[in-house]
Image 1: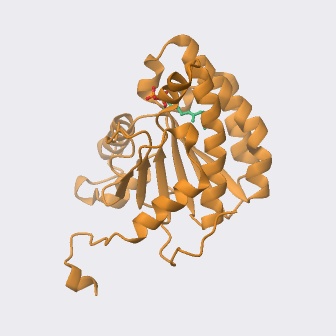
Image 2: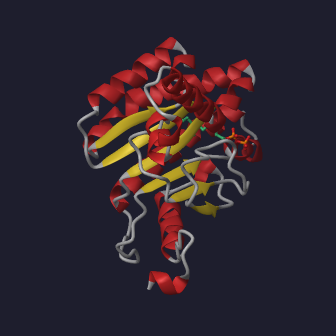
Image 3: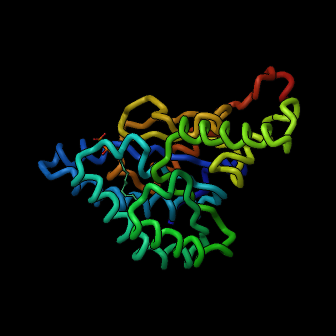
Length: 245
Ligand code: FPP
């Protein structure tokens, strides 16, 4: 269990994580990259259980990007196999912790077996209320924005929507994240400091947190540390400090 005593009541509602460093973790230890990904699934469990304990309502994990399809075929197969085996294994953890599974991304691009397993777990956990875990799979923010623009354009063309009524809410409705609030805190592991086409619209006001820890080494206490760091930030949303107090 996490020691939450140091936390105050300002818990971020939506935390997103770019899980990075599986390959480097494996290389450092002299293992194949696949071993890093496998150990990475254990860190996924740490993050999910930790987030649920802390009381985070929405956790979104970047599990597979649109760009990841360009990795060697064997690595893509390994990641898809790990997705299926994790879903089969972790459904118990999700039910026990009252967590609803959600997925964002172009799910049609996933292999049939992975998509089927994913949709099954989504269906089985749909009434869980404590936290929503969203897996970004075959996800790319630019692809999501293109899809959004296409759908809105069709509505405009068919006179269902007038261009001057297009606002943030209309755009939000067409994103994969339509039922999720904006991201409050974005974490990236492994020391890289970039966004890599993840939730570009949704992180407009997110606090960014970068840690050197490689994803397979990420523990509940590392999540706690990130939240403690978040709680020291002043989120001004364009206002002045004085206006906030
Ligand atoms: C980045 O490490 C990680 C990924 C591309 C995939 C993340 C996948 C997992 C944690 C395992 C499966 C996930 C689920 C949800 C079951 P990298 O390979 O880019 O590492 P590197 O930058 O050190 O090479």
